[in-house]
Structures are given as C-alpha cells and as structure tokens.
Length: 275
Image (cartoon, rainbow, N blue to C red; front, side, top):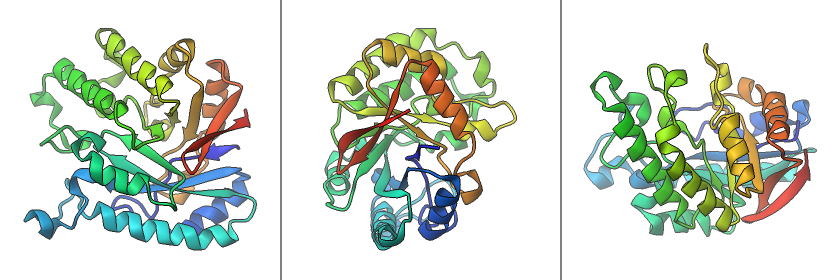
C-alpha cells in the first residue's frame, strides 16, 4: 500500500486513537506515506466562548486548538515513524469563509499539506445533519459545488477533499444525476489543474452498505482527460481499524483512470511516487 493522506486522530472531535497508534498500524500495513489531517473548521477556529456559543454535536469549535495539539504530536512522532513517511497536515473546512485564518495554518512551517474541504454551506450545519426531506436537492447540490468552486479559487490548500461530499448523505445517492452539474465540476477541475494542486480519491464510503467513492471513476477519468496530474488516495480514517480499508481498490481505480503515479506533498511541494 502506497499512501493514506487523509486521516484523523483523537484531536478531531469525531475520531479516536493517537498518532502513535496510527503509525503502528501504518507500519504493519507497509504504507509508504501517511498524513495526519485533523479537522480545522475555519469558520469556528476559536473556542465556542469566543463566538458566544456552546459546543454541540452539530458544531465543533476551537479548530486552531485542534491544529496546535495535532501538529505537536505529529512532530514528536516523526522522530520514530519507522518506515512510514509521516506528513504533518490539516483538513481545513470552509476556507472561503476565512481565507486569512486558513493562511495561518497553511503557512505554518510544520505543515506539509492541507486538505481543503466543504462540509457545510454558510450559516448551515454539516451535510450530515440536514433534513433532506425538507431540501430542494438539486438546488442544494448546486450550492455545494458553487462553494467548492469558491474554495478551489483560494490558495491555502494542496488537496481538494472528497469532491462529492455534498452527495454523501442524500437519501438515494446512487440515483442522483450529476449531469446538470458537470460544467461547474469541469471548472473546478480546471482550477485545480491551473493551480498545480491535487484531488483525492476518498474511500470512506467503501465501508457503507451501498459502497461509494468520492469522487467516482467517471469523474476521476474526466479530471484526467482535462489534464489533471495530481491524485492522492485516502480512507479518511477516523479509527485505526480503517487505516488501510479498501486502499488497494482505490489504487486500482486510479490505474483504471489512467494514472501511473500518485502525489504526496512535502512542505506544499508536490512529489511523485510510482503507482
């Protein structure tokens, strides 16, 4: 197994286990590269008290504190990472809502890579918490891809995270027709390509009763055909048991899409590894 560049530890509110525990499993799996990318919801960078709010299951705060604690542990564990190249990262959610704070994380000298993600629309909860029976689904998905396009136009990220996250919790995801959104998705791809950045194959959905990958093979091929060069692979593991789950399927999918190399990042500089 080559890489897993999107993983979360106990520093993320929805994950568990230490960086050291992840490393032991990564070495057992024979991973060459692993990044720890704990959650930094940039629109809630400070503790809840700063905003006059309370922490809830729907809204996590103190993204800056999460990053500091995570980066400190990564730096310590890099000294004893075995055969695994341990990369310091962060998953920044909602970058367009505060590009200046995002730049603070991106420009931290410890950081190798940043995953840019959209987990929620402005003034709305994470897509996980939406009541889809009350939503205009096509309008919601359009708004999601528009927000991803806004993210792509910013600079404080290296990997565009789980491109189709906005579809993840739809009641009948497999039946949803992406055709009306393809023009905008192509613009997202062109922006990623022009900035010499990457998209990821995110396999967290492989654990579901109806498995899926974000994005699917059709979109990965489309990205490649438009000139996409940089692709990363991840399981988005929030638990050590899922660190290697389905990685071989993702590698095979990347080959099927025409990739012969994968990308990893060292201090934001793309590096290649044979697939």
